[in-house]
Length: 334
Length: 240
Image (tube, rainbow over all chains, first blue to last red; front, side, top):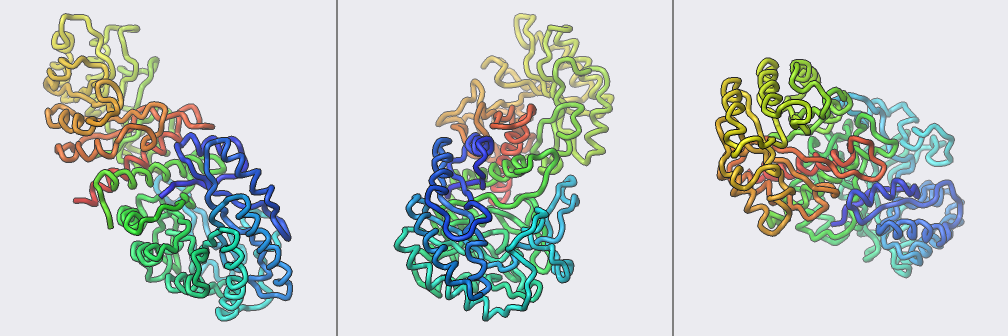
C-alpha cells in the first residue's frame, strides 16, 4: 500500500510532499477544458513529479466537464464520448495506470464548515435536512465562481436514468481503457444520499459499487474506494467492504478518511477519532493484499494551516504510516 | 502511555495546535532567556485553561552560562512545586564534581523535598551514569534515536531492556532530519517493546524534521510525528 497526497503543479507543494518521505502523488487533469486532454499535459506533470522522485500513479479525476453531458444523458453525449476515449488513450500513453472518475451529477456535497471540532478545529459537515433546499451544498460552488458543472438541474433525473447513462458510458469506455492499459476507478457518491435537488445519486451503498464491477466485467473496470464516503453510507461497514471489494482485486485506488456519523448527517473528523476502526481497516487492506495507492483524503482545518492544509495532511500521513508500521511489526494479517 | 506534544512557552498557537491534533498533554519548553526559574504558575494556568494536561516543563539548553546549573535547577524545582508542576525535563547536567552523584546531591534532595520529578536526557549521560539512575525522583528520559540508542537491529530490545531496568519516566523519539515513520528508526517496534516491558509513562517526539515550506517551529513535521505516535499507541491498545 503506497501512501500519497494530492498535489498540484506547485513546485513548493511537490517539495513538501517529498520531504514528508512520500514517494507517490495523485493529481488531476487540467480544469475547465472541453474535448481532449493532450498527452503533453499529462507528461508535463509526470515529469515535474519525477524530478522530485515522486511517482504519479493515479489521475484524480476525469475532469467533469469532459463528460457531464454523458452523465446527464443529453444529445451532446456522443460528441463528449469521443473526447473521453481519446483522453483515456493519452493517459495510457503518458504511462499513468489509474484514472478515477465519479458519477455525481451534482457534485460532492457538504453543508457546513464549523469550528466545533476538537480544540476548535474546523470540521466539514453534511446534513440532509440542511441540504434539502440548498443548491450551494455542491462542493464545487464553494470556490465562488460560475460553473457549467455542476449546475442547478432543469429537470429531475431518476435512478434508472442515471444508471442507464453510467452503463452506456462504461460499455463504451472500458474497452478503450483495456487497450490503453488504463484502469478506471469509480468513486462513490459523496455524500451518499439517494437524491439531491431531484437528481438521483446512485453509488450510495456497497451493492451499487458491486453493480459497477458487474456491468462490464473487465480487469480495467473497478472502484476508487473512498473509506470516508463508504463509512457514511447507511448501514455500511468499511472493514467488511474492504474485504468484499478488495478481495476481488477491484480496488484500484483508495482514499483514507475517518468520518463520524452516517447519512443523513455526518462530519469529517481526525482519523483517530472517527467511527471507523482504522486499525481493523488497515489490517483488512493488508489482508486483501492491496498494493495500490491510498491517498490521504479531506481533513479538518487546524490553526495556522496553509491553503493546502499541509499541517492537517501531515498528521494523517503520520497516522497512516504509524498504523501500517505497527501492524507490520506485529506481523498482523486479517 | 501518555502522548505529549512539546510546545514553546508563550506561543498560544502551539497550545491550540496540540489540542486540535489530540495530544493528551503538552511539555512546555523554555529556551535560554526564558524566565525558567521565576514563576511557573502562568505556564500551568495557560495549559489548564487551554483544556490540556501539563506533562512537564522542559528546561532547554540550561547550562552554567548564566548561573550554576544546580542552582538553576534547584530554583526551577521550587518554582515547579509552587505551580503544581510535577515533572521537569532537563537535558544536560553540568559536571563539576568527580561523579554525577556528587553533582546531583543537592538536586536529589530538593526533588525529594518538593516531590517534583527531574528527568535527565539519556543522550547526555555516560553509560555508568545511566546505570546509577534513578536516584530518588531524579529519573531518565530515554532519547531514542540518539546515542547510545541509535537506529539499529537491536534497538527495540535495547529500549525494552532500559525500561525494564527502571527509572525511565519519559521517552522521546528523535528522527533526525526525517519525519517519524520515514527514516531508519523503528519507532513502532520500540513502543511495542516498551509496552511489553510495562512502560506506561510519557511519550513524545523530539525535534521535528524541517519539512519543505514549513514554519520556524516545524508544525508540519510535528503533526506527522504526533499522528504517527497516536497510531502506534492506538494499535497497541487494540491488541489489548
